[in-house]
Length: 148
Image (cartoon, rainbow, N blue to C red; front, top):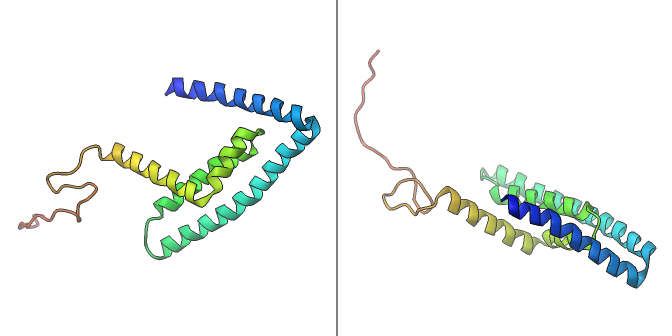
């Protein structure tokens, strides 16, 4: 985990610097800075629209009495997308804009849910106990009496 984070914090800034230098050498420094600011502003507007839409779906699911797990995870992905879009650079902007595309975001959320489910329930239930694929709680018949 530490190694992955270390590589992430080392590689991403290097890629960003490389891309900024390459784009700046082609279109110039001032247009490059303007483009970075423009993508951040555009990302903020799109993020707001997507966030409001996701919040509406959360409210609809709650009104139906359902747990809005997918919508909540989509909100978390949108939060990360917002952080990526506000980070100066073209690589993080590309990742942030990709997370704003509903199909890509839903695919990412479904992959996250599968991974989470595999960690929470690592083995398939074979005894009818709780877990994915069961039809409900097991019912045990019995008698009881209250002793005060």
